[in-house]
Length: 322
Image (cartoon, rainbow, N blue to C red; front, side, top):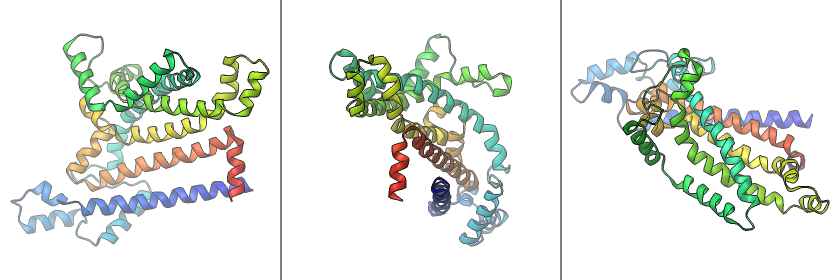
């Protein structure tokens, strides 16, 4: 019963957070200088033309009424109509979301395959040797390297020289999953650099924290091999902060790796949202931000529940605090 009560409390908090995000993004877009009618019609448009354009999309109604109408439709799955393309936002997202999801999955796969082993290796070599220092150096370099610098360098190298992969030629998912994933491999690698460095650093710190625990000293005293100790005693206890970071990175990637999508000409969700923001396409930006917030909150909720299973001490502490 306590588990159900805690779950309901977290779901309620998540729903209230999403409601707050919807209010903030709706108000922030209306408060930005330059309305939709001013940017689309231009400075030479007459007041009558601007008023007619605003009335055709309901932008002349009170803000509270506009928000209530939008929120009611969003709950039912209707994200509105794009002010620029005059097409449903849901259909636009359906075309672009698979591209960003594929890019996100590839980047996260590279992150986990490289970042976690690198972090464990760096932590277990922290007492000395060149391996630990090299791992820390790589992590610091990857976290400090801007994406636009690395992305521009990759675009130049693969455009100037024939290195086996093409740049700026996206293959749709319908033409073949492998071909589509291959066309997104380079941008996924660029995105994975920062994520891998952050994951390696977080894994290193988490593993170092677990290595000083008494049960690790007991395992060493029993004569258990080092690899066995790392696999069976360290990784599970060190996985909670890593999972939390991965949840944050997934929302960051899905919410829009805008620079990388622009550099590699990827028709994803991030570049679409930036275009919508430039043109004050309210329905597009509101739906995009709400989607990113939903992914972030849901991922953290799942990580919170999974953390209690991986480390029962967290669930016991939460129960005691309640």
